[in-house]
Length: 180
Ligand SMILES: [Zn+2]
Ligand SMILES: [Zn+2]
Picture 1 (cartoon, rainbow, N blue to C red):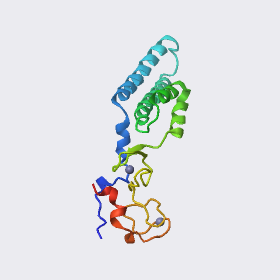
Picture 2: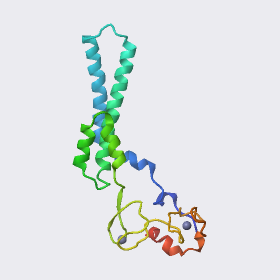
Picture 3: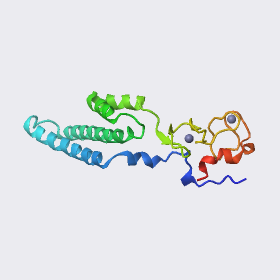
Picture 4: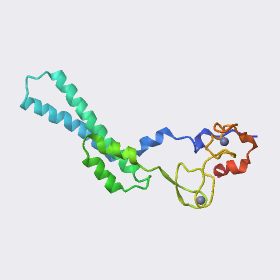
C-alpha cells in the first residue's frame, strides 16, 4: 500500500506562509508612512515643547509609538482581506476595528470571526473549511477514520481517537478528495 504523499500538496497541512500574503501592499506602505510620520512629528514636537528632555528616552518613546501604530495599520490590512475569505461583512467589521480604541475592535474580530469558507470540489457548495464531508453531496473533504469518522492524518496507520486500523478502510473513499 503506497502512503507516500507529496508534502507540497497535502491539503490538511496549513501553509504558514499564506497568512503573510494576506497583508495587502497598501497597508505595508501606509504602516511605513505612519512610522516615519510619528518619528518626524515627535522630533518637531520635542524642539517646540520640551527641548531639555532626555533625548534617548524620547527616541525610544517615539520608536515604540511608531511601531505600535504601524503594526495596527498592518493588522487592519490583514483583517480587510481575511474578512472576505470568511464570508463576513467587510464594511461592518472594518468600521468596528477602526472605531473601537486601542485594538479592542481587532480582538473582538479575532474572537468572533467565522471559519474560512471553501467550495466543495464536487458540487461547488460553499462549506466551512473544517468540514469533513460536504453537507449537500457527501463528498469527502478531509481524510477521516472509517469507524468514528473523526479527522485523521493521511499518513496515520491507526486512528488516534478510537484505534481503528485505517489500512483496512476503503482507500478510494478515504482519499477521494486527493485524487484530482
Ligand atoms: Zn458537495
Ligand atoms: Zn476512529
